Each structure stands twice: as structure tokens, then as C-alpha cells.
Length: 331
Image (cartoon, rainbow, N blue to C red):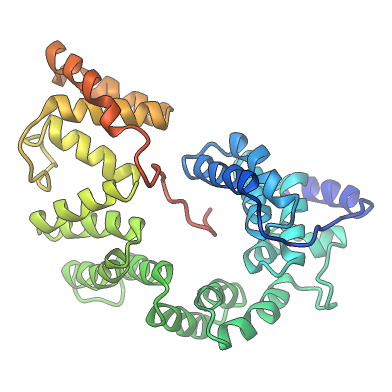
């Protein structure tokens, strides 16, 4: 991958980079950005790009960063010229995760796209841009320091800031602490203790309205055999727009007695479940939703499918829209 990046950045170094001044988005541009973010959230990166470009053109830093992410995902997580350009624009506006992406792509080393402060290290530039904001109480900046210090191999500082962010009310940081506890097989004496530790953080984020935490809390509670509570949170995840929660809701209505569905604490209603699946496929078409329809087709009678088609409108385009809720700084 490095020779490809070198070629891209060699060309990039000769291109003038015009960064527009940030401003508030007008109603039309905001609507375009919102739809672009929705499409990105359902893994339609290519369709999201022209919509996000409208916001980036008037200086929206978040749109710039996600244009970098969308462009990177189009090449299966690698780097493209478009991704590098967008990350660089976002980095110039102080976006720390864009700076870390530039570090991942060896942007300074290979292409002379270096931080303006002369540090020659995008990790250090991210730290310099973010630490003052975190010290001033910005909880998003506190959470970003977890990633920055992790990149700098300063893991104690990383955990300190992640905890500070969570204790200050940042829902994403609470959720991430739950993820870390769930995956930590060394610090706990039993699987139950590990899952209970994860559940505590997930619960705090879920109670704050964070959909990914609702979904993960439901899964952990199910693993702990707390099925009534698990079902409650899976339904709340569905209501908050989480695609996994919506799919669980549909499958539980169709076949609650199936093996592996102990959390399905609901009366059987195949027509309703089919309606939910049809609506999900209409709203988020793709391999996953089509596979689900094929898998459950024979478990629903023709009459139930017909009734489900009549009920589908009730489940279409609910607010908030369906999403996979991808991590901002994921793979």
C-alpha cells in the first residue's frame, strides 16, 4: 500500500488546497448534509459523497472528515487521493481524527503534507489541537484524547481522559468503556463479572439515549440470561433507529420460539414482523435485508405476508432514521 500512497501524495503536494471558511449551513445545505450522513450510516458511502460535499464546500468540518471516511471505505479501508484531500482539509480546521488518519497514511513522511506547526507528526499535532479543548471541559475533545494518546502509546493517559470524558457525560465515551470491558478477558475473574462491568457502562449510555449502547446492552443482558431486560433494551434500540434492534424486533415477532431467541419476550405476530422486515428492506436495501426476507419467507404464510404488506407503511421512514451507527473512528 505504501507505494500507492507515495504516488498519490507526490501528486497531492503540487495541488493548491483551498479551505473555505466555516459558516452556519443554510436549510438546503443542512438537509443535504443530514441525508448524506444518513446514507453513510447505512453503508452507502458512494451515495453520501455528493451530499456531504455541499456542506464541506462551505466549511463544515464534520462533512470534510466524513467525506474522508466515505472515500476511504470505497477502497476497502485503504487510502485514495480523495480521502487524503478531505482528511487534510479537516485537519487544517483542527479535526483530530482526520490528523490520525493522515498519520495512518504516512501523509507527512511520504507526501510532504505535514502539520503547519512544523512537528512533522500528525499525532503530536492532534494532541496540540485537542488538549487545550479537553482541559477547558470539551467532552468530545476528552474522548478524542483517548485515541490520540493510544496512538502515542501512552495508555494510562488515554484511559484517564476516556474516564474523564465519560464522567463528564459523554455518551460515546461511556459506550466505549463498555466495549473495552466486554472485550477484556484478562482483568476479570469470570465471564459474568466481565459482562456485568460492560453492562454498567452500556446502561449509563443507553439511559442517555445512545442507540449503540442500547443494542449492546441488550446483547450483554441476554448473555447474562436477563431476558426480560434484554428485550426491553432491544426494543428501545429499534425505536432509536438501530438496524440490529429493528431486525431483532421483526424476527422475534415472526418466530419468538426459535432456538437462540430467548430474549424474544413477545407474543408471536408474523404479519407484524413481516411488515417490519419489508419496511427495513425498503428503507435500507441491500444484501442483509434481502437475505433476511429470503430466510423468513417460508415462516410466514401467504395471508400473513399479504397482511404485512398492508401494515408496512406504519414502519417506513420513522424518526430517527435507521442506521448501523458506525464508529466515528472505526476500521
